[in-house]
Image 1 (cartoon, one colour):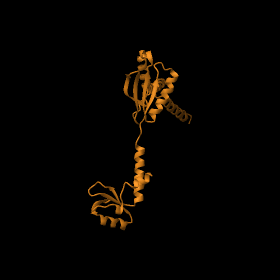
Image 2 (cartoon, rainbow, N blue to C red):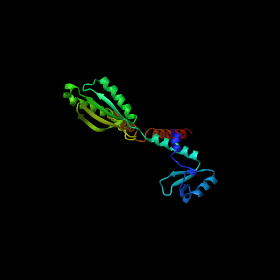
Image 3 (cartoon, rainbow, N blue to C red):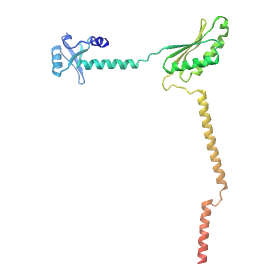
Image 4 (tube, helix red, strand yellow):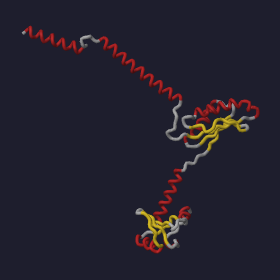
Length: 236
């Protein structure tokens, strides 16, 4: 059905009823009478395909029509694959959501953002629980902070009727921000490495200080060799 619809989008060969057409190809374009264009297609064993009927004159290509339809279908598939459908996923909290429920919803929100979807989280205040709106705001801010590695805040918490909303969007590639915990780990590792380097330098200084002033072990070895040589000459 889709192929038939695609076929009906283009006129070919004798279906093109105009006085002249512009033929485009790898070597540029040229305007020729429709009869000459049909003869060119016939001589090359291909079809005359009208690709831009609203141009003046209409634009055509000399190409096998089946190959042309395949190229168009492939191009449409590629364009469709590039179109990312962004959905808005909702996460609902109560003003006094327990930790287990919070972590469960946090996990789902992270998955939504990693899939490229937006997240709209809100706290629903039922009855007199509206008195705890500050508590709901703290909850949503914590929620956004816990998702900072995969999502960014589009709007801060705002109260709309009995609901307080916060909107999060997925971060783009290369936009990922390190968490405070990760930064602390890196700082600790760097500090430990620096301390180790200083300790090694200090140890080297202590070893050098204990070496003899006349040049150390190698100098002693040289002196011993000279003494042995003199002893040998005396015996001779």
